[in-house]
Image 1: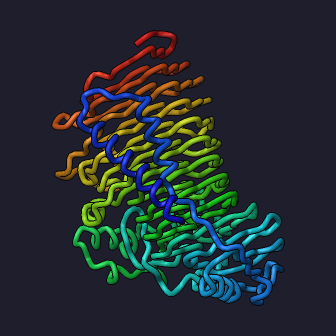
Image 2: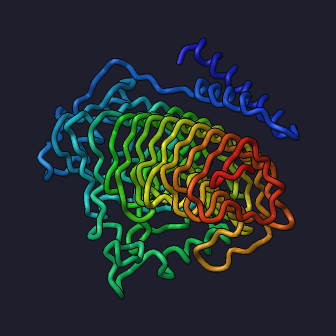
Image 3: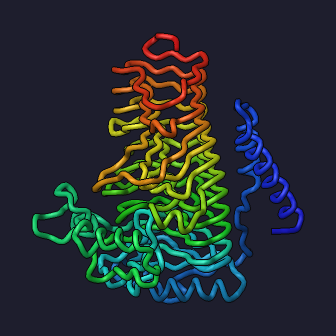
Length: 472
């Protein structure tokens, strides 16, 4: 990135900081300013550029017959590209079986149209363990299928397919559900030596290097995880058959996800989960997922409070949420907080879509969500609620603690919903710290059973809003 580009990025970043600083002090908000801020965030994000050099994996011994294991060949190509100053590592048409792919700085890993990368079903191929994360808690576990740690200027591009080969015979049964291949008596993630052990380590803040899982444990790996990386690009590729979360930028700065298709219906197959990350642009994507399409996170309980890095400055636009439980979700791993989220020009239409916009936390998580702007959203159908804010979220044991979540400045504008499901707006705040500053402007919700169910929330600001043809 040249000096002029760096200067422009700095100026845009400063404008975002100034705007948000003002917003948090204002008693009212100006939505037009918010969208100018969203534009500034997008312009401030450094998209990586690479030298015009190519490194074809075939030249390093790769064979695209679907049987030969290409882990070593891919590594040689990536290492050589990195050592020579960067460029594009090209995977040509064919079927390439491999273990985990570890990206390095200044490498654009390009999966050509007609290429399909098949990730090994041999779990030992994902050892030794690496520093990664599981449901908002850091640990040493199986390597993500595609991984990068402390790298700069990395990309995953091309119109090829990344096939995790997870299914009812691989990775998925560990979730413990019959529908994903689990059989009574098999090992599963909620067995004492798995998630309960990790939860205890989180509570006691065991050093991460001592939180060793992997072999002998049943915690599924991430698909693509850039960890503590700067300037990350994911463009045009298709992800399918993921073991767990699909894209998980963790502690990253400047992330662009553009034109990506996620078609994966396994357990916890979230499409994109930025966590402890800032300056993230998700655009022109199709999410056809088994869980939330986009879920913005920032650590679970003590781990989130230890890291103390909010996820912030996240812009989602021009995306289609074809299938998934939630359109854009914040939580539940949210202990470090989320701020400055902008969602515009998206379509959400799925019989499995429970909520279009969702915020979920509890008093063990705590955290905060503030400055959320949603505009120009078309929703075909939604099961539960168009907007769902829940400060009592919990699917495990007791979720009550001492950390009251703070939720404020949530704005929906120009939203059209044809079939609204059970609720138009469903909010469950806390008496000691109610939800604040919720605005619905030019929102039309049709065919909903109960327009509003609101507890412990300041009065909602309705502007030109119709629910079941009744003005609010």
